[in-house]
Image 1: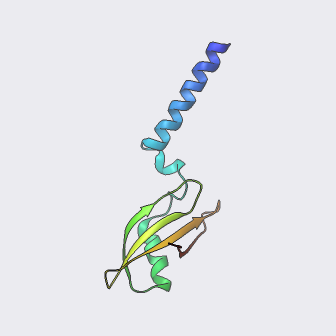
Image 2: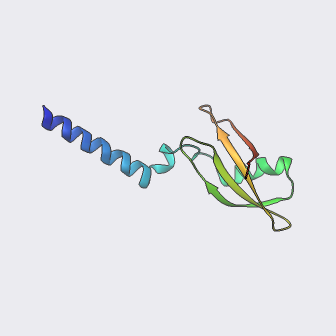
Image 3: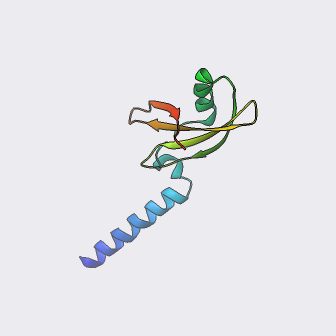
Length: 95
């Protein structure tokens, strides 16, 4: 019985590692489902001078921090927060 539990634990641990580091990581990690083009379009609705997304720091349990380059070359950080229904809000991040 103990051997079976050890094998189940090892298989579960390996599955979690593969999901976070491998191909399936995009499905498991939080705030991974959004596309950069979709987020950029939503940012451009309120901030028309946004040109492109430079970096996206995706987090599992916190908000995702998105760095956007503006037309004048300045970089601004936005926080993306999502819920279970795939609705997301974008706000300016505190520095």
